[in-house]
Length: 411
Ligand code: ADP
Image (cartoon, rainbow, N blue to C red):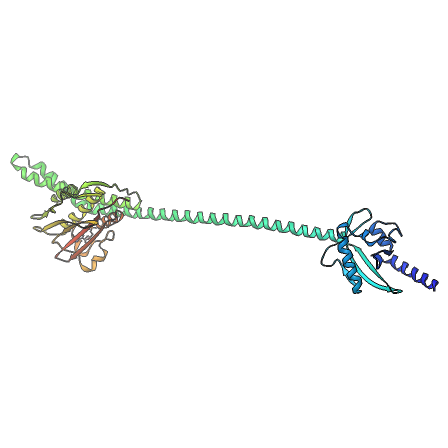
């Protein structure tokens, strides 16, 4: 029997020494009864040194009580299992250093005595590889985050750049459009000048030549007649030039308005005085009544330009011995100035185009004109919070009304 026991013992020894894992066998009281060479080496003990020691010497200090509890429970259940899976398991070497392990527990009975055999593997190398992998993953993630942030920055920089370019292109095409329009305007101006200026200029020349011929002092009335013609034609040419300058300013965005307070009668008098020089035989302009107390806060030059355009049109497009009526009507928030004539009127079909630049109605083509005046008046008045409307019937006459706002503080 004893021989058999010894034989068994040495077979166990041979087997256990051949195994690379550490083998520790503890009894019910968790006292180590056997350890193989691999276990001794792993834990830093000499052969046989562990025998009789409590298992706790192999367990890090902090884990002792927890371990004892678990071990007791485990011994009751009596089934094999793997320790350390799912959570980190650590063991303690003789020199006190701690290292990660994996342990498989196998309970068994000999002579009615319970034992547990633990197969222990040092997983320091594997663990350090795992840590390295986690670290590398972290580094990689950080790198990706940095790269993504850099990429996002470049993308938003690129977007901003694209935005700036689009804006710049927009500005360029806008200024090209303006340039083109101004170019067209200049071309138009040259062709208009060559047509529209020829007749009045030759009229001026003729009158000037004739004036110089009336040398006798009693020929004053003849001289006056020609001087009047000269004045009126110069006035006419001046108006065309002013209209063109207005368009040029409107187009290039260089219009500046000047609001000031002035008596309405001052502007009306000036405009009618100048228009009187253009009157045809028997034509007359009636002054508006009761305007002496009216003061406006508006751009005086714009009002003068607008009224000049409307009154000159009324004179131009109506016949001799007709009356041009100027009336002023006051409303709560605005003032209306109405210019009525008994002239050729505007054909129904042309009425909707009348404020288009360069548009001239069919029945107006025999008269001199550029088709600019009404367009400018409308633009100017709109910019200043005013407006222009008209009513007209062919061969009966037209009524043009401009509305000036009474409060005009925020322009
Ligand atoms: P222009 O008189 O130089 O042609 P306007 O812009 O002042 O240019 O007027 C545009 C057109 O409107 C005129 O050509 C004419 O057909 C029409 N029009 C303007 N005022 C009158 C009016 N009082 N009576 C008839 N037609 C008018």
